[in-house]
Image 1: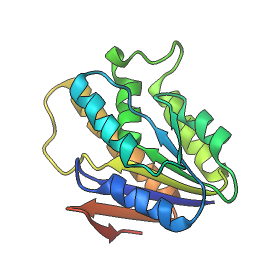
Image 2: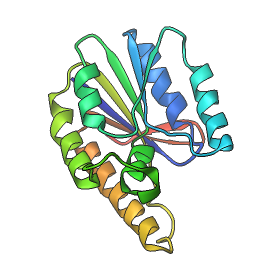
Image 3: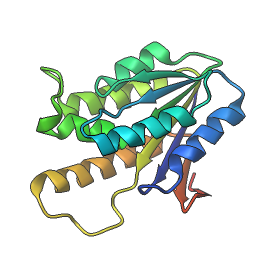
Image 4: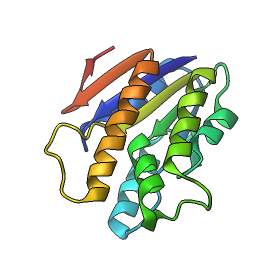
Length: 174
């Protein structure tokens, strides 16, 4: 298994970079999209992402139970892109995002971290780096920033490659 973590801010070019890595791998690609549509503007963003993908790529939409999906989809000689861990986290901790009954963020996180080293194939995870600004106001916002930072650190430690993208330019961290 080859695990890559692509980090960056909003509109930094991290998804485009992850997609380039997948294309350059020459492997069949499955795109695991974690976003749910909550409003028209966000729906347009998602649609833009969908139409920019090569038609031969398979897409799986999964807002929860990411570890289960990765276990089902990962295989030798195949590439998975998960875009993105940030939306997955937000949907797991946000009470308005209606996680399935019995699903907790801690369980979801633990399942992902436990499963990542066991996966086969090439895995590319995309995540936002949210810790470069001020500590946000509001408890849920601070919880999100803290959990995202912890998740990114843990996934980076497990990854073979970590790249930070800013202004469309990749900077290899690991």
